Image 1 (spheres, helix red, strand yellow):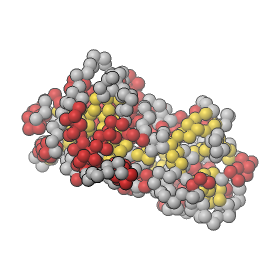
Image 2 (cartoon, helix red, strand yellow):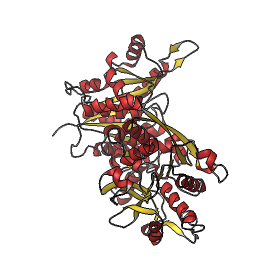
Image 3 (cartoon, one colour):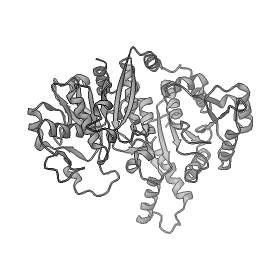
Image 4 (cartoon, one colour):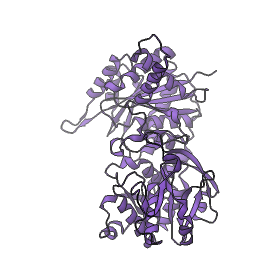
Length: 533
């Protein structure tokens, strides 16, 4: 039985340095060298998952194929590795404590005083190992959220210390990511924050094996030698990570710095084979040398924080490169769109995407946007609530159903064209209770959706409670809005499409969760093509 190798990625000095991108880039390089790799994220907040968090607070909630609501970093992992993640790839403090408390209530610890050490740390270690159960992977990378020194991260850091001791240095290494700021007043890059951060990590009993230094400029050999000396790290284990124009360049930069070979050397694993990155490099060439350019509007209500639509933005990067097209995304707040200004706000766009969301705020702006795109023959892509708004608009303005709405917004509407799913009506809890994860969909042959996918059966990821109301299906079909995709088990409408329109498609699921660098989502590719055309 092979020994699984573990890499832990911690951060210091400041948050948002890019631990997720460094983790995904290293995993990509190891995968390209023939190793089976997965990445998991340990999040120190007490929510059981990010599903109930405001997008302004946490950015996008990413959904896995098996129905887990997770941190947006899992989206990066999948986009880089082209391998699905699962429930086991995202662990929160809330989930850890919930498990331990449930065990205590059942009497599993009968007679014992339940404590952070060993009970909480044991559960963390169990979760870390769970992702590699069955020896599916050669190497497991674990990103620890937050920064070293945060009170809430301490149980995770202690668990890493214990694992290093239990598994041995040849099976467990720590990469510490820190910031090297540049002071323009003195013209110097300063290493002191890194030294302090490593000192803080040492106080927890962990000596980092590799340091990755984030910087906005190249660092000289003397500075790296100084960091190595003060932080007790080998010189060739000090890696620089300089700002780049796209996150997809980071694996190439890490390859040039030898991050992957440094890791493999510490694990005493072979690295004779050069990493197979031809397709990745080809993607970067297309991304950086577009032949066309378009402007696409993303209409949503969380646009002040673009991370709320992270997977959508990245899907445009993938599909743009596939079409050799530069995509200028304009984020438009749906609350700002009115009857009086919608022409001014939306004209000049080559395509419009109405983004997902929940609640009544800004919904009328989304409905108006769908009308503008329909009436002006502008390529339109509605995702989840975006699809529902297109249905509401069509009902009001084409089917003359005055006041048609979703019962999420107006439960007394005379025409509930979007209604709560039957199995959701008795549910009162908010967390993890939606229709989540992968569901099959049968596509109508001859539709634009069929042209995009090239097949009749697909599986896509969902995250919603409300659905198209089948009671009105015949009215929609007779007037030109066709059900282009149906769930085979429940007969629910998953995709709507306008027959006599350049490209007008709404989907109940979230195609953005499935788009990766090497497999751009076919609907995004088709939408961008229509915008260019």
